Image (cartoon, rainbow, N blue to C red; front, side, top):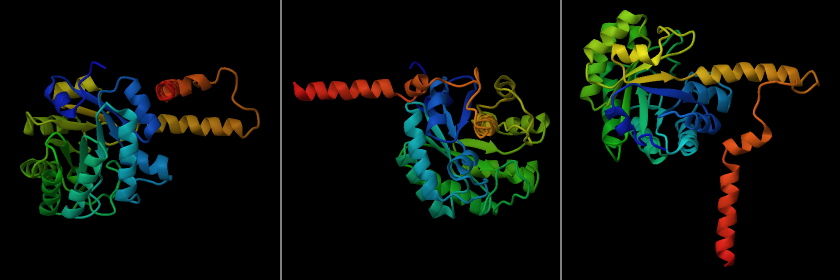
Length: 292
């Protein structure tokens, strides 16, 4: 593969990075095969796809770390940015989670400033912790990592709970605390997106683009022109797949099976996508060497 294989390299290159959301190992593998330069593990998606739960802080740190390991392995060597929610506690918890995510082969952890239990960034009723507590978590995460190549993405949800000025104030504090990437969640219009970019020129900035969300639905080119470095599309695949699952199960339960021409991969193609031919070839080669 010709693409850079570290998030450090991607951030140093000119141009915006599109990070599609993955919610399990299969979606991560397919994102990488489609040509993604980086994959984003969405906590919203993991909560729903792995546990059948809404994104309101019900999944534990250990459960999330297990998913990081599986997803990072599935999309390797493409870098993984992994949602760490609010660090699952105080500064010590954030530090421990950072160590766990790095050991599980993510290349970046995202930590936000919400209270526990938290909510998806585009839901109503969010609350944030005091600024000093939030910055302490970012500092603890930055100091816990084994390598500076592992990145800390700091997210603030203060636009929803206070105003944009408070979100910008928190962004400054998070950068001083050691954050490498800044994520101001849910600006309400292009003017607010522009103000964030103007305030933090030269800082790798994240724009989170959610279908039916609070931020204008802009494409990567428009976001790059505004000054953003990473365009997250965290739930696009999940929402599309959910619609397909609803339709397929409704059809199957009529007792007729899939209709002729129903969009799907073949059984053979699915096995190719998840690497069966390569694995069988590797196993045969090992057996041949052992026997000789």
